[in-house]
Image (tube, rainbow, N blue to C red; front, side, top):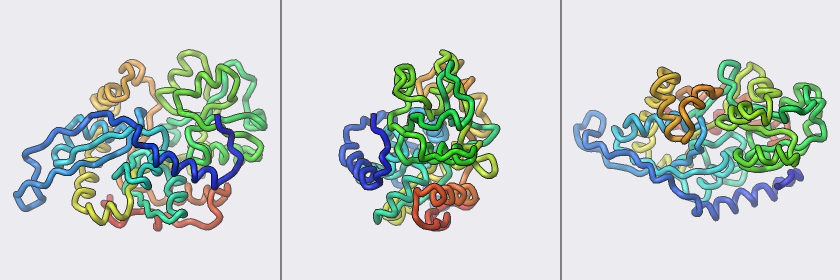
Length: 343
């Protein structure tokens, strides 16, 4: 278990090492069906089939892409998806930097800014998921029988996060600060989401920053309880942009048509999730993350929106500056792809 020492150099080295060894990640082997009816828009000629290597996590973040895969939206655009599983948005960004991915579905703005400050050119091509009061999704959880009730009770405690100095940690720090406590007075330990339960039971962590399917599992087994839905609780307007879909500018420039086709299919997946989140879309989610449908129906869901929400993106960037994740003022417009389909 790695405890944050505030060493940004070491963090960047870790990200690059992840990129170098990412080849050990195993592709899920799930690929889109070829669509013989796919044609170039308005030309009547078949569009060239393209394979896109895309990162996924076996959690709700990947829902719209799972739907697009199962419903044939990508196949209709003659796109074959090659899924690559990663553990965090930081790993996804590192994989892109290392050339192992074309599109990162599960990244976040902190990872994008950190990569671009090192000379890379990563762009946001779409929102991925958003949290708010209706769709809280990510929880700050404490042991079920613990005495912790407020942010003050957590001073000096150890928080588990899936990525040090990542988006989830940043919003936990923002929540501490909003509640009058110094975020520098808590510790952060990096570990995968599935490892947090055993770490909490052993007492090596005091707080788990986690999402479903793990949140519902903790609640079912009385392992932990929700102290805060810290993303929405810490955000100025009560909602936050959590996940992003990103690509490198070089890949975008060389694959403009494929990118547009990808975004058309992704947007159809988002529309389907929004219209059928308690129906067929939930069946598809349960199948792809391999969790019983009865359990998935009790998940704390997340909201999907098309395009890029520039206002929420700017709020996240302002938090980065406020909390010392970046030393300068950041502008949302500098991180949005010029090829984004306007919604």
